Image (cartoon, rainbow, N blue to C red; front, side, top):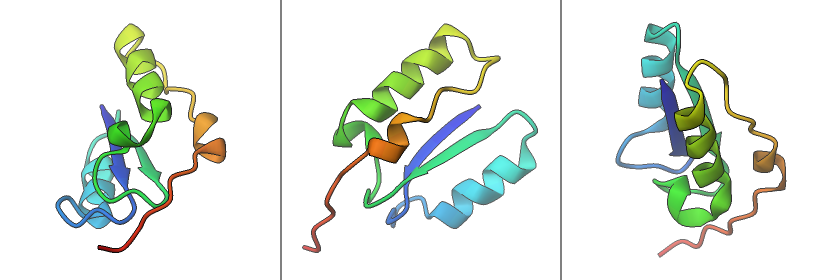
Length: 76
């Protein structure tokens, strides 16, 4: 199971994602800094991770791109 989310998500709060990940032995959770809901809309990092997961769901996707991930969240 692959879970990607934003640390500022108000629709699916990070605490919900953390709880879901804790309930499943095969869950891989990645929370992106400065992202409100979907990291897929914030650049290629999450898309690459999803592709890796689809290519081989038995492996944890490489999350190295998250260290260089930069997305500036702006308050409405």
